[in-house]
Length: 92
Image (cartoon, rainbow, N blue to C red; front, top):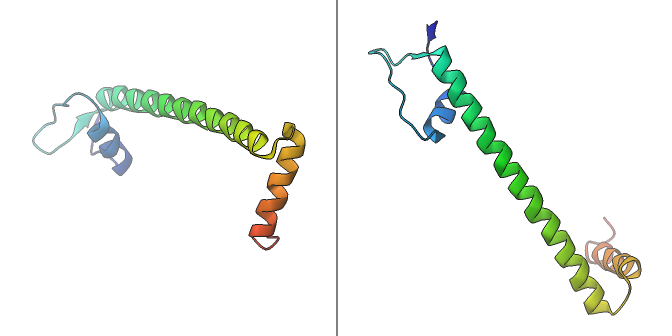
């Protein structure tokens, strides 16, 4: 089956690593689109995993920094930090 690309498929195709041969009207086969969609989804999953690892690392660094700065165990330092944030944002 041959059909025109949707907006999302065009974006996935542009982010792909290989060129796709199209016919004169710019249509692409469904098999090629499915292959590209799978490649695009794997890339997104890898990026999500990378973001999750970075976020986890930042949380740990923040914990250590707050504890060191306040000279307190984590749970006490966390309560002090949240109280400070709440005060700085006028309790909102």
